Length: 165
Image 1 (cartoon, rainbow, N blue to C red):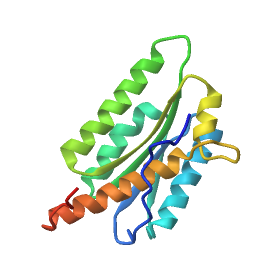
Image 2 (image 1 turned 90 degrees about the vertical axis):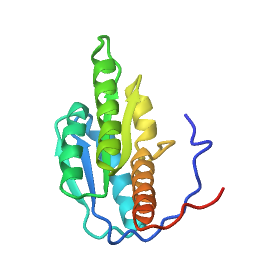
Image 3 (image 1 turned 135 degrees about the vertical axis):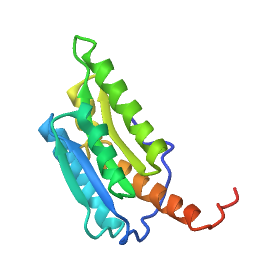
Image 4 (image 1 turned 180 degrees about the vertical axis):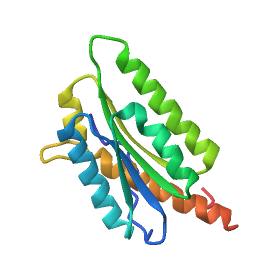
C-alpha cells in the first residue's frame, strides 16, 4: 500500500456545499477511522453542516447515496469496507456497491466520494482506515475528492470554463 501518485490538493472553502456522508456499520474499528478521516476533511474544507447517515453494510451504500443525491446533496461520501472471505460474497458486494455508486454519480450529477475499502485482510483495511499507525487515510481522501469534484461541477454549471492543462 502506498499513497504514491495521489494529488497534492489543498483544501478549499466548501462552506456552502450540501454534503452528506453515508457510512456502513460493519467492521466498527475500520469504520470509526474512516468516519474520523471524513470529519477531518469536512473541517479542513469548512463544510458547515454535513449530514451523516449510517447503513447496515456496504451493499446499502448506493440506495441511500441515491436518496441523498435526489434531495439535493451536491457531494456524498460513501464509506464502507468489505473484507474477502471464503465465498463469492466479497465479489458480489464489491461489484454491486461500486457499480451502484458510479451510476448514481453519472445519473444524478452528484459528486460521489468513493471510500469503499475492498481488502483481502482486516489488516489491509486497518492500514487504510486513517487510524493511529495506518499508512493511509481513505476516509479523508474520499471526502476531499468528493468536495473538490463538487466544486468543479458547480463551477461548470455556473458557466466557468474548465482550466487549460
